[in-house]
Image (tube, rainbow, N blue to C red; front, side):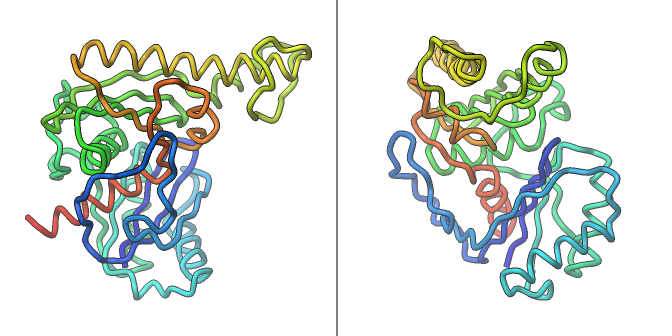
Length: 276
């Protein structure tokens, strides 16, 4: 089995895959469809908080516990691949996987063949998660493609028709924007984020939901419009990330919602290494 680990600034998403290679077929899914949880051999997935204070031993205990919860022994893990945007955790996670599973994980970064040419200067400054998303989008949906990832930051990334990662844009994410608003505006209280009933809110809660959800949906549509104009051709638009299922349905431009895009990208890259 393959253990895929996607380390973000807020959460660590862990996926357990079967070892069957991917088919390479394009996705037939329509607008705002969800890939089933077992797509691409995804057997199980978990989300834990990102904490730089955790030791390799602590992450190892967590990995053993998660695997045990689905009846899998760490000895059954034949490979591991890690995408990490928190550099201090590189040696920690490497040691955690090595001591827990007895294997050395592949860390995605410069020098790893992802299947997409990275046109970014310098290449070291592009987050590995963005490259992984680009590889997954091109492999599953074809190019050109635009990936919108609603994470700690909201990222917009473009893939050319030839499969080149040509860059993108970075904006403050929903969570940190809300936190900044609530911490700086004394009269505004924290709310549960869910779809608003209408755009013109008749209460503080409704107004906040409208401003946040429709505001970020509008941001998505405008950024996609500008990307499409610069790409010069109609691109597939894929949304992923923790809040994709909440925001993307309110947009006009998102065609596919894929919560597992990054994990699937890690599986794609892992399989690619075996073919080299």
